[in-house]
Length: 420
Ligand SMILES: Nc1ncnc2c1ncn2[C@@H]1O[C@H](COP(=O)(O)OP(=O)(O)OP(=O)(O)O)[C@@H](O)[C@H]1O
Ligand SMILES: [Mg+2]
Image 1: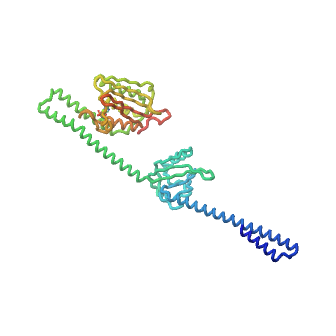
Image 2: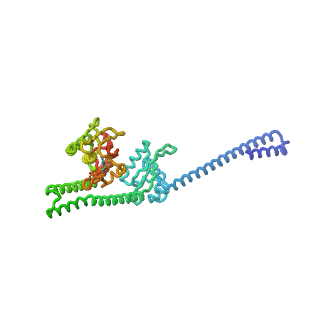
Image 3: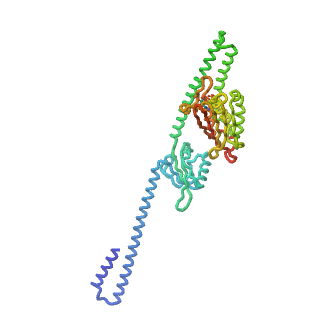
Protein backbone atom coordinates (compact mmCIF):
# COMPACT_ATOMS: atom_id res chain seq x y z
CA UNK A 1 0.00 0.00 0.00
CA UNK A 2 2.77 2.39 0.97
CA UNK A 3 4.50 1.65 -2.38
CA UNK A 4 1.32 2.67 -4.25
CA UNK A 5 1.07 5.89 -2.15
CA UNK A 6 4.75 6.65 -2.89
CA UNK A 7 4.28 6.14 -6.64
CA UNK A 8 1.18 8.39 -6.64
CA UNK A 9 3.03 11.15 -4.74
CA UNK A 10 5.98 10.93 -7.16
CA UNK A 11 3.59 11.07 -10.11
CA UNK A 12 1.93 14.19 -8.65
CA UNK A 13 5.33 15.87 -8.17
CA UNK A 14 6.51 15.10 -11.72
CA UNK A 15 3.20 16.29 -13.13
CA UNK A 16 3.37 19.61 -11.28
CA UNK A 17 7.02 20.08 -12.14
CA UNK A 18 7.16 19.10 -15.84
CA UNK A 19 3.63 18.73 -17.31
CA UNK A 20 1.88 21.77 -15.86
CA UNK A 21 1.97 23.69 -19.19
CA UNK A 22 0.72 20.88 -21.43
CA UNK A 23 -2.55 21.22 -23.29
CA UNK A 24 -5.89 19.87 -22.05
CA UNK A 25 -6.03 16.70 -24.24
CA UNK A 26 -2.48 15.59 -23.36
CA UNK A 27 -3.23 16.15 -19.71
CA UNK A 28 -6.41 14.09 -20.10
CA UNK A 29 -4.41 11.16 -21.58
CA UNK A 30 -1.86 11.52 -18.86
CA UNK A 31 -4.60 11.18 -16.22
CA UNK A 32 -5.98 8.08 -17.96
CA UNK A 33 -2.46 6.59 -18.12
CA UNK A 34 -1.99 7.37 -14.44
CA UNK A 35 -5.33 5.66 -13.60
CA UNK A 36 -4.40 2.53 -15.57
CA UNK A 37 -0.93 2.46 -14.05
CA UNK A 38 -2.31 2.80 -10.52
CA UNK A 39 -4.96 0.11 -11.12
CA UNK A 40 -2.31 -2.28 -12.51
CA UNK A 41 -0.06 -1.51 -9.62
CA UNK A 42 -2.89 -2.22 -7.21
CA UNK A 43 -3.78 -5.44 -9.07
CA UNK A 44 -0.14 -6.59 -8.96
CA UNK A 45 0.06 -5.74 -5.34
CA UNK A 46 -3.19 -7.63 -4.57
CA UNK A 47 -2.01 -10.68 -6.56
CA UNK A 48 1.35 -10.61 -4.84
CA UNK A 49 -0.34 -10.27 -1.45
CA UNK A 50 -2.71 -13.19 -2.08
CA UNK A 51 0.12 -15.36 -3.40
CA UNK A 52 2.30 -14.55 -0.43
CA UNK A 53 -0.52 -15.40 2.01
CA UNK A 54 -1.23 -18.65 0.16
CA UNK A 55 2.42 -19.64 0.22
CA UNK A 56 2.57 -18.98 3.93
CA UNK A 57 -0.58 -21.05 4.55
CA UNK A 58 0.77 -23.85 2.37
CA UNK A 59 4.03 -23.79 4.28
CA UNK A 60 2.11 -23.92 7.57
CA UNK A 61 -0.01 -26.78 6.28
CA UNK A 62 3.07 -28.66 5.08
CA UNK A 63 4.72 -28.16 8.47
CA UNK A 64 1.58 -29.25 10.29
CA UNK A 65 1.16 -32.39 8.19
CA UNK A 66 4.87 -33.17 8.67
CA UNK A 67 4.36 -32.71 12.40
CA UNK A 68 1.36 -35.07 12.37
CA UNK A 69 3.32 -37.59 10.34
CA UNK A 70 6.18 -37.35 12.87
CA UNK A 71 3.74 -37.82 15.76
CA UNK A 72 2.23 -40.85 14.00
CA UNK A 73 5.66 -42.30 13.32
CA UNK A 74 6.93 -41.68 16.83
CA UNK A 75 4.06 -43.73 18.30
CA UNK A 76 5.37 -47.06 19.65
CA UNK A 77 2.03 -48.67 18.72
CA UNK A 78 1.41 -49.92 15.20
CA UNK A 79 -1.31 -47.77 13.63
CA UNK A 80 -3.29 -48.75 10.54
CA UNK A 81 -6.14 -46.74 9.03
CA UNK A 82 -8.33 -48.78 6.71
CA UNK A 83 -11.67 -48.34 4.98
CA UNK A 84 -14.81 -50.50 4.81
CA UNK A 85 -13.22 -52.73 2.17
CA UNK A 86 -10.18 -53.29 4.45
CA UNK A 87 -7.94 -51.25 2.15
CA UNK A 88 -5.13 -49.60 4.16
CA UNK A 89 -5.05 -45.80 3.62
CA UNK A 90 -2.53 -44.82 6.29
CA UNK A 91 0.05 -46.57 8.42
CA UNK A 92 2.90 -45.53 10.65
CA UNK A 93 6.54 -46.61 10.85
CA UNK A 94 5.85 -48.84 13.87
CA UNK A 95 3.26 -50.79 11.85
CA UNK A 96 5.68 -51.32 8.96
CA UNK A 97 8.36 -52.39 11.42
CA UNK A 98 6.05 -54.69 13.44
CA UNK A 99 4.65 -56.48 10.39
CA UNK A 100 7.96 -56.50 8.49
CA UNK A 101 6.96 -54.36 5.48
CA UNK A 102 9.08 -51.80 3.65
CA UNK A 103 7.92 -48.14 3.79
CA UNK A 104 4.82 -47.60 1.67
CA UNK A 105 4.29 -51.31 0.99
CA UNK A 106 1.26 -51.54 3.27
CA UNK A 107 -0.57 -48.61 1.64
CA UNK A 108 -3.35 -49.83 -0.64
CA UNK A 109 -3.01 -53.44 0.59
CA UNK A 110 -6.10 -55.21 1.99
CA UNK A 111 -5.18 -55.82 5.63
CA UNK A 112 -2.58 -58.52 4.93
CA UNK A 113 -1.74 -58.42 8.66
CA UNK A 114 -4.92 -60.30 9.64
CA UNK A 115 -4.51 -64.10 9.71
CA UNK A 116 -7.35 -65.83 7.75
CA UNK A 117 -8.70 -67.46 10.94
CA UNK A 118 -9.08 -63.98 12.51
CA UNK A 119 -10.94 -62.42 9.57
CA UNK A 120 -14.40 -63.08 11.05
CA UNK A 121 -13.29 -61.66 14.38
CA UNK A 122 -12.20 -58.43 12.64
CA UNK A 123 -15.56 -58.19 10.85
CA UNK A 124 -17.34 -58.62 14.22
CA UNK A 125 -15.17 -55.89 15.78
CA UNK A 126 -15.91 -53.59 12.82
CA UNK A 127 -19.68 -54.16 13.26
CA UNK A 128 -19.31 -53.35 16.96
CA UNK A 129 -17.44 -50.14 16.12
CA UNK A 130 -20.07 -49.19 13.52
CA UNK A 131 -22.71 -49.49 16.25
CA UNK A 132 -20.77 -46.94 18.29
CA UNK A 133 -18.81 -49.12 20.73
CA UNK A 134 -15.05 -48.96 20.19
CA UNK A 135 -13.27 -52.30 20.67
CA UNK A 136 -10.66 -51.67 23.36
CA UNK A 137 -7.65 -53.78 24.36
CA UNK A 138 -8.71 -56.95 22.56
CA UNK A 139 -6.16 -59.76 22.76
CA UNK A 140 -5.86 -61.48 19.41
CA UNK A 141 -3.30 -62.40 16.75
CA UNK A 142 -1.80 -60.67 13.72
CA UNK A 143 0.73 -61.91 11.20
CA UNK A 144 3.92 -60.59 9.67
CA UNK A 145 4.73 -60.37 5.97
CA UNK A 146 6.42 -63.78 6.24
CA UNK A 147 3.19 -65.29 7.59
CA UNK A 148 4.33 -65.66 11.20
CA UNK A 149 1.41 -65.20 13.64
CA UNK A 150 1.97 -63.48 16.96
CA UNK A 151 -0.04 -62.22 19.94
CA UNK A 152 -1.18 -58.62 19.97
CA UNK A 153 -3.45 -56.36 21.94
CA UNK A 154 -5.44 -54.02 19.75
CA UNK A 155 -8.02 -51.29 19.89
CA UNK A 156 -10.31 -50.57 16.95
CA UNK A 157 -11.74 -47.06 16.77
CA UNK A 158 -14.05 -45.28 14.35
CA UNK A 159 -12.52 -42.54 12.20
CA UNK A 160 -14.23 -40.08 9.85
CA UNK A 161 -12.36 -37.84 7.42
CA UNK A 162 -13.64 -34.29 6.63
CA UNK A 163 -15.51 -35.77 3.64
CA UNK A 164 -17.46 -37.90 6.15
CA UNK A 165 -16.07 -41.14 4.75
CA UNK A 166 -15.96 -43.90 7.38
CA UNK A 167 -12.63 -45.47 8.31
CA UNK A 168 -11.30 -47.74 11.06
CA UNK A 169 -8.23 -47.01 13.13
CA UNK A 170 -6.43 -50.10 14.40
CA UNK A 171 -3.89 -49.43 17.15
CA UNK A 172 -1.87 -52.54 17.92
CA UNK A 173 0.73 -53.48 20.52
CA UNK A 174 2.98 -56.51 20.44
CA UNK A 175 2.31 -58.57 23.61
CA UNK A 176 4.47 -61.61 22.84
CA UNK A 177 6.67 -60.92 25.84
CA UNK A 178 3.66 -60.37 28.14
CA UNK A 179 2.04 -63.64 26.98
CA UNK A 180 5.32 -65.49 27.46
CA UNK A 181 5.65 -64.10 31.00
CA UNK A 182 2.05 -65.00 31.74
CA UNK A 183 2.65 -68.56 30.58
CA UNK A 184 5.82 -68.79 32.67
CA UNK A 185 3.91 -67.55 35.72
CA UNK A 186 1.16 -70.07 35.03
CA UNK A 187 3.77 -72.80 34.74
CA UNK A 188 5.33 -71.71 38.05
CA UNK A 189 1.88 -71.63 39.64
CA UNK A 190 1.17 -75.13 38.32
CA UNK A 191 4.48 -76.44 39.64
CA UNK A 192 3.85 -74.81 43.02
CA UNK A 193 0.37 -76.33 43.17
CA UNK A 194 1.79 -79.71 42.16
CA UNK A 195 4.40 -79.41 44.91
CA UNK A 196 1.73 -78.46 47.44
CA UNK A 197 -0.47 -81.31 46.21
CA UNK A 198 2.36 -83.82 46.54
CA UNK A 199 3.21 -82.57 50.04
CA UNK A 200 -0.45 -82.53 51.08
CA UNK A 201 -1.11 -85.98 49.64
CA UNK A 202 1.92 -87.45 51.37
CA UNK A 203 0.94 -85.81 54.65
CA UNK A 204 -2.70 -86.89 54.49
CA UNK A 205 -2.07 -90.48 53.42
CA UNK A 206 1.00 -91.11 55.53
CA UNK A 207 -0.78 -91.10 58.91
CA UNK A 208 -3.63 -93.52 58.09
CA UNK A 209 -1.27 -95.79 56.09
CA UNK A 210 1.23 -95.94 58.96
CA UNK A 211 -1.50 -96.72 61.50
CA UNK A 212 -3.00 -99.39 59.20
CA UNK A 213 0.41 -101.04 58.76
CA UNK A 214 1.01 -100.93 62.52
CA UNK A 215 -2.40 -102.43 63.22
CA UNK A 216 -1.89 -105.16 60.58
CA UNK A 217 1.50 -106.03 62.08
CA UNK A 218 -0.03 -106.31 65.54
CA UNK A 219 -2.94 -108.39 64.24
CA UNK A 220 -0.51 -110.75 62.50
CA UNK A 221 1.19 -111.28 65.88
CA UNK A 222 -2.22 -111.94 67.41
CA UNK A 223 -2.22 -108.71 69.39
CA UNK A 224 -5.49 -106.77 69.19
CA UNK A 225 -6.25 -103.28 70.47
CA UNK A 226 -9.85 -104.33 71.12
CA UNK A 227 -11.51 -107.38 69.62
CA UNK A 228 -10.69 -108.68 66.13
CA UNK A 229 -13.97 -107.20 64.94
CA UNK A 230 -13.22 -103.75 66.39
CA UNK A 231 -9.72 -103.70 64.89
CA UNK A 232 -11.08 -104.74 61.48
CA UNK A 233 -13.60 -101.90 61.68
CA UNK A 234 -10.81 -99.43 62.46
CA UNK A 235 -8.84 -100.76 59.51
CA UNK A 236 -11.90 -100.39 57.29
CA UNK A 237 -12.53 -96.81 58.42
CA UNK A 238 -8.89 -95.85 57.67
CA UNK A 239 -9.18 -97.45 54.24
CA UNK A 240 -12.45 -95.61 53.61
CA UNK A 241 -10.74 -92.34 54.47
CA UNK A 242 -7.92 -93.12 51.99
CA UNK A 243 -10.53 -93.91 49.34
CA UNK A 244 -12.44 -90.67 50.07
CA UNK A 245 -9.18 -88.74 49.91
CA UNK A 246 -8.21 -90.22 46.53
CA UNK A 247 -11.71 -89.51 45.19
CA UNK A 248 -11.48 -85.88 46.33
CA UNK A 249 -8.04 -85.57 44.73
CA UNK A 250 -9.42 -86.92 41.45
CA UNK A 251 -12.31 -84.46 41.62
CA UNK A 252 -9.89 -81.63 42.28
CA UNK A 253 -7.61 -82.50 39.35
CA UNK A 254 -10.50 -83.16 36.96
CA UNK A 255 -11.84 -79.64 37.37
CA UNK A 256 -12.65 -78.05 34.02
CA UNK A 257 -13.87 -80.99 31.91
CA UNK A 258 -17.55 -80.60 32.50
CA UNK A 259 -20.72 -80.71 30.45
CA UNK A 260 -22.89 -77.74 31.27
CA UNK A 261 -26.62 -77.54 30.73
CA UNK A 262 -29.48 -75.65 32.36
CA UNK A 263 -30.05 -77.13 35.83
CA UNK A 264 -32.83 -76.35 38.28
CA UNK A 265 -31.17 -75.22 41.52
CA UNK A 266 -34.10 -76.14 43.78
CA UNK A 267 -34.23 -79.69 42.37
CA UNK A 268 -30.46 -80.10 42.81
CA UNK A 269 -30.68 -78.94 46.43
CA UNK A 270 -33.56 -81.32 47.11
CA UNK A 271 -31.61 -84.24 45.59
CA UNK A 272 -28.51 -83.47 47.66
CA UNK A 273 -30.35 -83.03 50.95
CA UNK A 274 -32.25 -86.26 50.25
CA UNK A 275 -28.95 -88.04 49.75
CA UNK A 276 -27.55 -86.63 53.00
CA UNK A 277 -30.63 -87.21 55.13
CA UNK A 278 -29.53 -90.58 56.66
CA UNK A 279 -26.33 -88.95 58.03
CA UNK A 280 -28.29 -85.93 59.24
CA UNK A 281 -30.87 -88.12 60.92
CA UNK A 282 -28.14 -90.19 62.62
CA UNK A 283 -26.86 -86.94 64.21
CA UNK A 284 -30.43 -85.72 64.87
CA UNK A 285 -29.72 -82.60 62.80
CA UNK A 286 -32.79 -80.60 61.79
CA UNK A 287 -32.73 -79.49 58.18
CA UNK A 288 -35.04 -76.86 56.76
CA UNK A 289 -35.30 -76.09 53.08
CA UNK A 290 -36.75 -72.74 52.11
CA UNK A 291 -36.85 -72.67 48.31
CA UNK A 292 -39.86 -70.38 47.94
CA UNK A 293 -40.11 -68.68 44.62
CA UNK A 294 -37.06 -70.41 43.21
CA UNK A 295 -38.88 -73.29 41.58
CA UNK A 296 -37.97 -73.39 37.94
CA UNK A 297 -34.99 -71.03 38.32
CA UNK A 298 -32.09 -72.49 36.40
CA UNK A 299 -28.34 -72.05 36.14
CA UNK A 300 -26.01 -73.26 33.39
CA UNK A 301 -24.03 -75.96 35.19
CA UNK A 302 -22.58 -79.43 35.16
CA UNK A 303 -25.08 -81.48 37.17
CA UNK A 304 -22.49 -83.59 39.01
CA UNK A 305 -20.43 -80.55 39.91
CA UNK A 306 -23.43 -78.58 41.11
CA UNK A 307 -24.40 -81.51 43.34
CA UNK A 308 -20.79 -81.84 44.54
CA UNK A 309 -20.74 -78.12 45.42
CA UNK A 310 -23.84 -78.31 47.64
CA UNK A 311 -22.73 -81.67 49.06
CA UNK A 312 -19.42 -80.17 50.18
CA UNK A 313 -21.09 -77.16 51.83
CA UNK A 314 -23.82 -79.24 53.49
CA UNK A 315 -21.28 -81.83 54.73
CA UNK A 316 -19.19 -79.06 56.26
CA UNK A 317 -22.30 -77.66 57.96
CA UNK A 318 -23.23 -81.14 59.20
CA UNK A 319 -19.69 -81.65 60.55
CA UNK A 320 -19.81 -78.28 62.29
CA UNK A 321 -23.09 -78.70 64.16
CA UNK A 322 -23.40 -80.82 67.26
CA UNK A 323 -26.16 -83.39 67.81
CA UNK A 324 -29.60 -81.70 67.72
CA UNK A 325 -28.12 -78.81 65.74
CA UNK A 326 -29.84 -77.28 62.77
CA UNK A 327 -29.04 -76.41 59.16
CA UNK A 328 -31.13 -74.02 57.13
CA UNK A 329 -30.96 -73.82 53.34
CA UNK A 330 -32.40 -70.69 51.82
CA UNK A 331 -32.58 -69.75 48.22
CA UNK A 332 -33.43 -66.40 46.74
CA UNK A 333 -32.69 -63.79 44.12
CA UNK A 334 -29.42 -61.97 44.44
CA UNK A 335 -28.06 -59.02 42.44
CA UNK A 336 -29.26 -58.72 38.86
CA UNK A 337 -29.29 -62.00 36.89
CA UNK A 338 -27.91 -64.03 39.81
CA UNK A 339 -29.29 -66.51 42.32
CA UNK A 340 -28.14 -66.79 45.92
CA UNK A 341 -28.12 -69.97 48.01
CA UNK A 342 -27.44 -69.67 51.74
CA UNK A 343 -26.47 -72.68 53.82
CA UNK A 344 -26.61 -71.61 57.45
CA UNK A 345 -25.71 -73.78 60.44
CA UNK A 346 -25.64 -73.18 64.18
CA UNK A 347 -22.41 -75.11 64.62
CA UNK A 348 -18.96 -74.32 65.98
CA UNK A 349 -18.33 -71.41 63.62
CA UNK A 350 -14.95 -70.46 62.12
CA UNK A 351 -12.27 -68.62 64.08
CA UNK A 352 -11.19 -65.35 62.43
CA UNK A 353 -7.59 -66.57 62.03
CA UNK A 354 -8.82 -69.78 60.31
CA UNK A 355 -11.22 -68.05 57.89
CA UNK A 356 -8.57 -66.80 55.38
CA UNK A 357 -7.24 -70.36 54.92
CA UNK A 358 -10.39 -72.42 54.45
CA UNK A 359 -10.15 -72.46 50.61
CA UNK A 360 -6.52 -73.63 50.60
CA UNK A 361 -6.10 -77.21 49.36
CA UNK A 362 -5.41 -79.64 52.28
CA UNK A 363 -6.30 -77.08 54.91
CA UNK A 364 -8.42 -78.73 57.58
CA UNK A 365 -9.13 -78.25 61.26
CA UNK A 366 -10.53 -81.76 61.54
CA UNK A 367 -8.59 -84.53 63.33
CA UNK A 368 -6.06 -86.48 61.19
CA UNK A 369 -7.70 -89.19 59.14
CA UNK A 370 -11.06 -87.43 58.94
CA UNK A 371 -10.86 -84.23 56.90
CA UNK A 372 -9.02 -84.04 53.57
CA UNK A 373 -9.10 -80.24 53.45
CA UNK A 374 -10.01 -80.46 49.76
CA UNK A 375 -13.76 -79.82 50.03
CA UNK A 376 -13.75 -76.02 49.80
CA UNK A 377 -10.84 -76.01 47.31
CA UNK A 378 -13.02 -78.16 45.02
CA UNK A 379 -16.07 -75.97 45.72
CA UNK A 380 -14.17 -72.82 44.79
CA UNK A 381 -12.91 -74.49 41.55
CA UNK A 382 -16.46 -75.45 40.65
CA UNK A 383 -17.74 -71.95 41.27
CA UNK A 384 -14.89 -70.38 39.30
CA UNK A 385 -15.83 -72.51 36.31
CA UNK A 386 -19.49 -71.57 36.62
CA UNK A 387 -18.93 -67.83 36.96
CA UNK A 388 -20.09 -67.94 40.59
CA UNK A 389 -18.64 -67.21 44.00
CA UNK A 390 -18.94 -68.21 47.64
CA UNK A 391 -18.36 -66.24 50.80
CA UNK A 392 -18.55 -67.20 54.47
CA UNK A 393 -20.21 -65.30 57.23
CA UNK A 394 -19.25 -66.89 60.54
CA UNK A 395 -19.25 -66.24 64.28
CA UNK A 396 -17.26 -68.65 66.48
CA UNK A 397 -19.52 -70.87 68.65
CA UNK A 398 -22.63 -69.38 67.04
CA UNK A 399 -22.61 -70.72 63.50
CA UNK A 400 -21.66 -70.21 59.88
CA UNK A 401 -23.48 -69.18 56.73
CA UNK A 402 -22.03 -70.12 53.35
CA UNK A 403 -23.44 -67.79 50.67
CA UNK A 404 -23.21 -69.09 47.12
CA UNK A 405 -23.93 -66.82 44.17
CA UNK A 406 -24.47 -68.20 40.66
CA UNK A 407 -25.40 -66.49 37.38
CA UNK A 408 -28.92 -67.31 36.20
CA UNK A 409 -29.48 -69.11 32.92
CA UNK A 410 -31.91 -67.54 30.50
CA UNK A 411 -33.49 -69.04 27.44
CA UNK A 412 -31.93 -66.34 25.25
CA UNK A 413 -28.50 -66.72 26.89
CA UNK A 414 -25.72 -69.13 26.03
CA UNK A 415 -26.99 -72.43 24.69
CA UNK A 416 -26.84 -75.63 26.70
CA UNK A 417 -24.27 -78.37 26.41
CA UNK A 418 -21.19 -76.11 26.57
CA UNK A 419 -17.91 -77.67 27.54
CA UNK A 420 -15.72 -75.65 29.85
N1 LIG B 1 -19.78 -74.67 58.09
C1 LIG B 1 -18.60 -74.66 58.66
N2 LIG B 1 -18.48 -74.46 59.98
C2 LIG B 1 -17.28 -74.45 60.58
N3 LIG B 1 -16.10 -74.60 59.93
C3 LIG B 1 -16.15 -74.79 58.61
C4 LIG B 1 -17.38 -74.84 57.91
N4 LIG B 1 -17.11 -75.02 56.60
C5 LIG B 1 -15.76 -75.10 56.50
N5 LIG B 1 -15.17 -74.98 57.69
C6 LIG B 1 -13.73 -74.96 57.97
O1 LIG B 1 -13.02 -75.02 56.73
C7 LIG B 1 -12.09 -76.08 56.74
C8 LIG B 1 -11.88 -76.58 55.34
O2 LIG B 1 -13.06 -77.20 54.85
P1 LIG B 1 -12.96 -78.23 53.68
O3 LIG B 1 -14.32 -78.65 53.31
O4 LIG B 1 -12.10 -77.67 52.62
O5 LIG B 1 -12.14 -79.43 54.30
P2 LIG B 1 -12.62 -80.40 55.46
O6 LIG B 1 -14.07 -80.26 55.66
O7 LIG B 1 -11.74 -80.15 56.62
O8 LIG B 1 -12.27 -81.82 54.84
P3 LIG B 1 -13.31 -82.74 54.01
O9 LIG B 1 -14.03 -81.80 53.13
O10 LIG B 1 -12.47 -83.71 53.29
O11 LIG B 1 -14.17 -83.36 55.02
C9 LIG B 1 -12.68 -77.10 57.68
O12 LIG B 1 -11.69 -77.96 58.21
C10 LIG B 1 -13.29 -76.19 58.75
O13 LIG B 1 -12.30 -75.75 59.66
MG1 LIG C 1 -15.38 -80.39 53.98
